[in-house]
Structures are given as structure tokens and as C-alpha cells.
Amino acid sequence: MALVKAEERVPARMPLAVYEKISEAAAVVGATLNQFLVSAAIEKANAILEQERVINLSAKSAKIVFDLIENPPKPNKHLKKALQTRKELLCK
Image 1 (cartoon, one colour):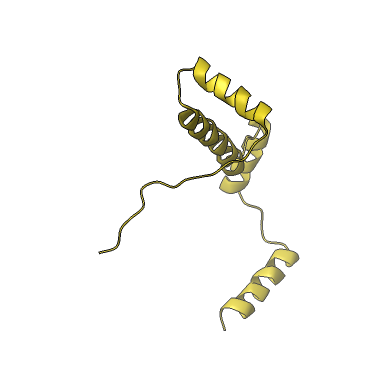
Image 2 (cartoon, helix red, strand yellow):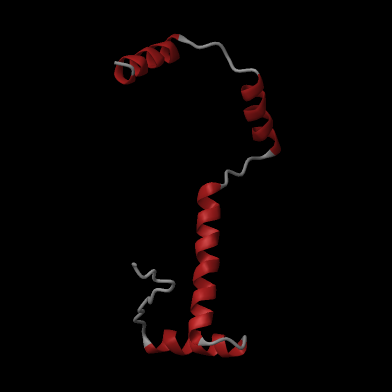
């Protein structure tokens, strides 16, 4: 039976001034240094992933996108050629 690791360690080296600042901030919010670092890291990770996964559009741009989805234009010669190339490459 294989053991499953539930936690991992992340070693971090930093200048003393950075360490002291982070330690002070952790103390202010009543967290351990580890709790503070994990909390800050997960907040940053969530922000980055949200930024990469979400497309923000203005109301005008969103209307254009939805109108195109509901009423797509007829395929032009470039799209027809691309579809034919795709068919030739993938449907051999």
C-alpha cells in the first residue's frame, strides 16, 4: 500500500530585512510565519489564475461577441480553405 503525501515543504531563502518585515506582518495579524506565507501565496495564486482564466469585456464588446455567436457570418474563402486543410490533416 503506497503512502500518500498530504503536505509538502517549500523552503524559502530571503534577505533578513524581508524576513523581518514578513514576520512583523504575520505577528500583527496573529498568524504564524508559515500561516502568513501560505495565506499570502494562495491569495496571489488565486489572483493570477483568475486573471488568466477570466476575460473581461466592456458591455459594448460583450454585445458584439454575443451577437456574433447568435448570428455568425457566412464562411469566407479563407475559413473554407482552413477547414479543408484541417480535414485533410486530421481526417486521413
